[in-house]
View 1 (tube, helix red, strand yellow):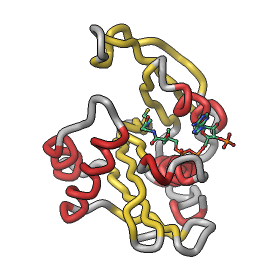
View 2 (cartoon, rainbow, N blue to C red):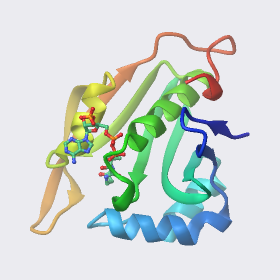
View 3 (tube, rainbow, N blue to C red):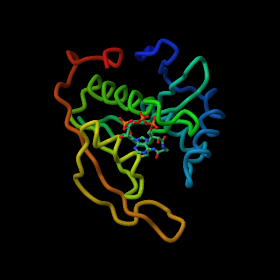
View 4 (cartoon, rainbow, N blue to C red):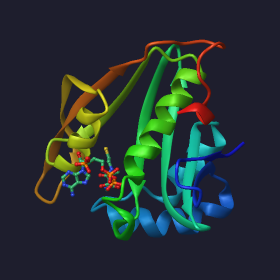
Length: 167
Ligand SMILES: CC(C)(COP(=O)(O)OP(=O)(O)OC[C@H]1O[C@@H](n2cnc3c(N)ncnc32)[C@H](O)[C@@H]1OP(=O)(O)O)[C@@H](O)C(=O)NCCC(=O)NCCS
């Protein structure tokens, strides 16, 4: 399954192990404290929703989300630094929200660093609201950093809901 998103040259498709080298290149460039390749491998192995976004055949970003018990949890959402601020992050997030609904989730949740103002603007603009705080959740240059917990309720759920192609 893959989905063409608005611009014909941009598409999202499920991540495979063959994507991991490219994913890790973006992960290391985009985050001060990147995930290891082993974390991505584990996410693929346990069957989390792992998707990549391509533009003209080039890897531009990826998203990882778990769904269970009516709740989706976005674990990673990342766009390559050189491709940021062109609307790709919002499109990928919209795709993950569509997938969450498709899989029957009633809520999408995520954690974000307090200092990540870019991501916070994106999530708030997409209807996410703060529901909590996890103290010392992330490693930081000095000590630890708190995470904000954000959630967005989903309108429809279940087999009749819009699929990922419809987002
Ligand atoms: C957060 C991230 C995914 C956004 O992706 P993106 O493709 O650059 O974002 P978009 O171009 O789709 O922008 C969507 C909205 O996000 C916000 N935003 C994105 N970049 C921003 C910036 N540099 N400054 C301020 N707001 C920004 C804006 O609200 C923007 O909407 P607008 O363009 O209408 O103002 C991207 O910056 C990224 O991958 N960052 C590193 C990894 C990360 O922090 N992921 C989130 C972990 S919780």
